[in-house]
Length: 190
Image (cartoon, rainbow, N blue to C red; front, side):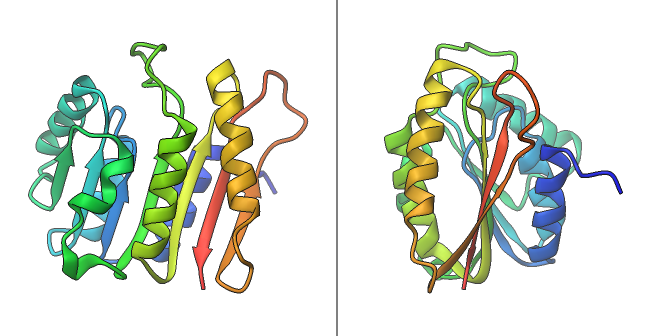
């Protein structure tokens, strides 16, 4: 058996919880790959909310969605993921099936613009309240740069402290790789 790499494993986890008509959140649109995956997974009857602090990421994501004819079910916000709570339709509260974050910086973008632990923890706290029972929040954590290492420590500490009566938290990491490889924190709401 070959273990799945980090990013394919996120897809496996998302596929297990997402169906046609569901609601999903991409907390860090980046180049739009996850946003498109979420849009295809929930279909035209579903809803995806996408967030990114960089206009370049929003434009790239929008283009990817339009090219794939998957933009009608997606709302994109040029805002921090810390503002998620202010953008979700009230009838979607408690009904979100999945959310994903790729922390760090935009691949191919300005490496000085990174996700911040305080904003990420705020967004995670908010999304946990938005998730339905059985819903899933995935954080792909990149500790290979100084800001990422700090965010990794704080986000891992926060998720480790979640009440086991309410959540299951999985850490998926290849521990024999060099250069601080990325890992997954997956939080399932009971």
